[in-house]
Amino acid sequence: MAFNLNATVSGLTTISVGIPAAGPTPVRGTLTLPGIQKGDAANSQVVVTVTQTPNMGSPTTIYTGMAGAEGFGFLANCAALDTLAITMSSAALVDQGLNVVKTTISVG
Image (tube, rainbow, N blue to C red; front, side):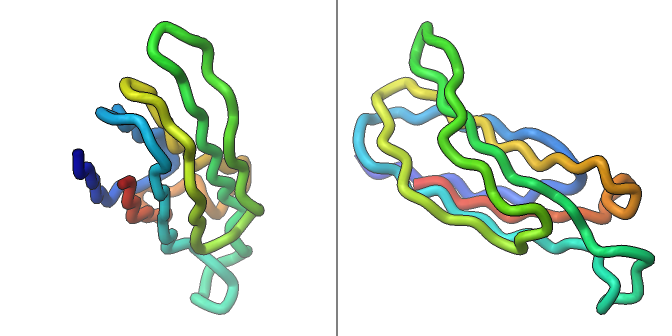
């Protein structure tokens, strides 16, 4: 069963994706972040974290990116009905503004 989700989100947020079928699932994303070279006061410290939750199970962190990275990509080994939660988080003041962080995500 072919499955593909593409989404663009703004801000520090979490997007959850239900996986319909078992198998290796590509998870990719690009981030547009504030930075000194773009005229901002400081560089971004956004960290992308991905957790995988099996159907009726507990979440496990399967990916943690580097602070300020402008992209991520990996292959998640999923079972049918797993849920992947992709979270963009940061404590840096430069990342807290409305819509200063934009993330384009592709799953599948």
